[in-house]
Image (tube, rainbow, N blue to C red):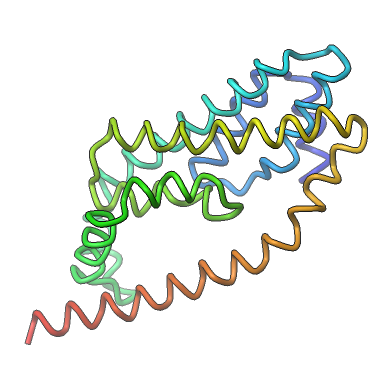
Length: 200
């Protein structure tokens, strides 16, 4: 996957960065830790604009996040209360998401944009909770810009060794993925308890 991303970005430039980052933010596991530093490295060689790399990546994050958010906002409840019931999802899970985002929503979106793994999927619970779209977009772009700026700058400075950025972030990715998985499992069972309590 990494070699394919390198080829795509090298050939497609800013458009490829925009599209791959849109796909990542829509839930497709594409590594921004490869794409954006590569854009920064290409900028150091004069092949791309550094500012253009940051803008393309951040605009892609916003676009993909908005697509994921709107799809889940429109169909998430139907999926959870329909096919989702076959795997134990209930209305309690919807209420759990709503309660969480009523309290922490925009802060969670902003913070999630700055964390590997979490940044790819934060739009889904945000859409499920139906938080307001304009603040969601604002929190998304405010979190995406510093993340992409840091990655692009690291790639710019490292030049041909830009892949060291992904290596440096690698040790944090697995623990975060485990934490996210544990949180999902905990939320699943807590949501079921909410549903069972309110049903009885």
